Structures are given as structure tokens and as C-alpha cells.
Image (cartoon, rainbow, N blue to C red; front, side):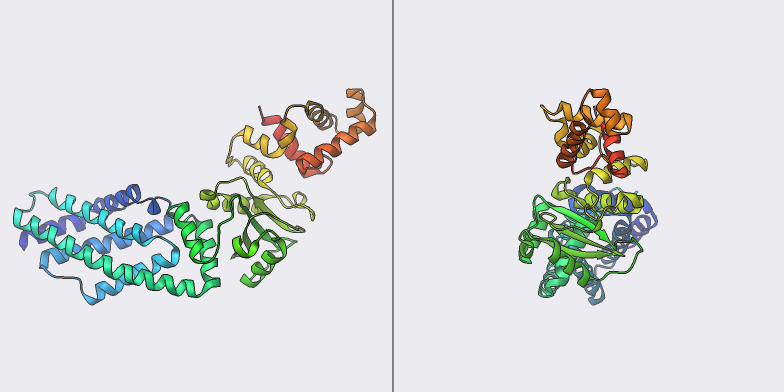
Length: 378
């Protein structure tokens, strides 16, 4: 027992052991690779506690206590609530146990054969007990959450925009259990009060807005939640507008968290004149704002495609020429003179540009986005 205690003290005193466990878990379990710093800190705390308890069981030839089991059940319940799959959780413990046994074997001097066999037996027995206890607690919590249907749907979107998921497949299965099909393609809308005053909103407000906006099978596909003073809606398509918000539809389903951050940052940084009652900000506006803020989230040619869209397609060179000349001269009359057109012909082309891009070159903010896109695009 003295040799086991000596090794236990070595491992507990070395911060690198917990760091090695967390690193291995992140590398081998995808659900943990996407966790943010606050969640990783929770993983470190749990890893340190579990390491101490497992080594204590080895030193004393004992088994998990009722208090240990309650804590592990609580951890499983928390993972069910935040959407981390139980399979990923149990795999994380298996990975941690492997790192622990490797560290014990690497101790100086290493344990003898009887102690090594005792460690392996303890690890297998403990993991078997954990699998049963944690799976039971996870299932019970999942069933409770599913029973509270509205809360479960909100938690699903909360997890999506926070990036707490193992895979698109796992999310699809989770949504299916709640009677939802994740929209693909989707539109993620982040909206706030019309004057941007930071007034509080409620989940009821979000759900009400969802019903008024989504006329595309919303009962089966749409989700709503609240983030501070803003509502967040996941839709198949955006219907009626009249909002102050930002709608992102160009990101893949596994990047909904990226879409949320892009939209939220756009609302944080957009000048007042960028908002228009008939038009929410879109992917293009958000990418331009990220570029202006020194946080470019995509390439110049992608910004060009998002803003200019159909104007870069073959056969529309005359429209790009009209836009470029209008932006260079600052007026329709001056652009018409430079191109040798009647002013009405130039204005017709500007209206056509507005129809194709949903951006009016005469609007100050939309003119700026068009000017940036035509400047930086190849």
C-alpha cells in the first residue's frame, strides 16, 4: 500500500497529469473538442476530482461510495441537460482511465505486477459501475427534459448556438425525439428591439415572433430562444420582416454557432444607418462589418459573392459597369454621361442592380457594402 500511496502522491502533485487527461479527451472525443473555455474548466475540475478518487480506490482496495455515485449521477444529468451524448461522456472516462494507468506505469519506480493488476481490476470495475449509474441518470434526465417539451426545444437551440454538440447526426436525432427536423438550408435570425435600446425580451416574445415570421412549415422545423436583450430564431426561411436584426443563411448546419456569433457581432457593431425597416442585415453585411472591425471571417472573393451575387454572372457586365461608374462618380447623371447613356437608362440599371442584389446603391450603408465588395473581390 505504501508504494501505491507514493505513486498517488506523485500523480496528484503533478498538474501535467490532469492536463494530459484533458488533452487526450479533447483529441479523442469530438464532443469535447468544441467546448469553450468555461466548459473546459469544468472538465479540468471533474478530471482532477475523478483522478484523486480513482487513485484512492486503488490505494485502499475499496469501491465507489454512495457520495461518489451521487456526484457521477449529477454529472451525467448535467450532460443530458447540455446535450453532450452519454456515449461521448462514457468514452471520455475510458480515455481518462487509460491516461491514468499510463501515468501510473510511468512512475519512478513503477508499480510491481500485483499493484498493476490491482489498478487494472479497479479501473475495469469502476468504469463498469459508472457506465450503469451514469447511463441511468442520463436517460432519466433526458426523459424529463423531453417531457418539458418547450424547454427542451429551447435548450436544443441554446446548445446549437453555443456549439455544444458532438455531430450533426447527434443533433438531428435529438431534434427528431422532440418532433423537430432541423431546417437545411436554414436561416439564423438574431433580432432586437427596433431602437436597439437593450430592452429585455422573454421566451414568449421569441416564440410569438417565430410564429409571425415563419410561414414555411415552422411548426415542424423552427426553434426560438433568448440571449440577453435579443431573440434568436432558427428558421427554414425568413418571411415578413420589419425587424432590426441580422439573418445568416450561408453557413453549414454544423456551424450554427459560427452563424450566431457573426450575427450577434454584426448587431453589436452596425451603425444606425445600416438598419432599414424593410430589410434586416444579412451574411454580406455581417462579413463587411467583421472586415471593417479587423475580424475578417471569410475571404475577399466570398464577400464579393455575398454582396454582388448575380452581378458577377456572365452577361451582366453592363450592370457591373453601371454600378462601378455610379460608385466612382457619385451620381446617376454623372455616371450616365461617362457611359454615354441616357440618365433614365442608368437609373433603370441601378434599379435592376437593386433587384438582383437586394441592395440599393442609393442607400448610404448598402452603397458602402457594394463599394467594398467591388473593391476587394478578384
